[in-house]
Image (cartoon, rainbow, N blue to C red; front, side, top):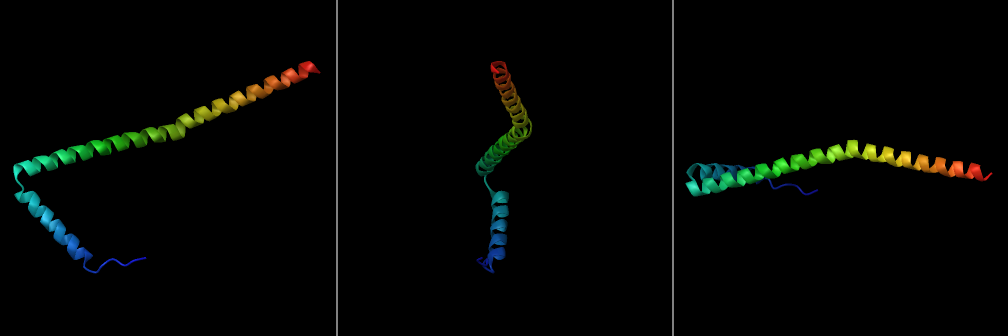
Length: 89
């Protein structure tokens, strides 16, 4: 495993300070752009949350219902075959 450079925390702190200064002195158009990016990111997070919820509901509930129906169909098919076999005898 590679070791991170020793100066990485200093570089990250400097980038954070530069970002804060940019946001404080940014022109209105840049702030409007950043607001739009934030809104877009919120929509992406909302869609991801909805997708995760739907996946969970499918994984837990719908799969159980489908599996139970499949097992019942196999069981009824087997009973029909056994009844037909008994009728032949």
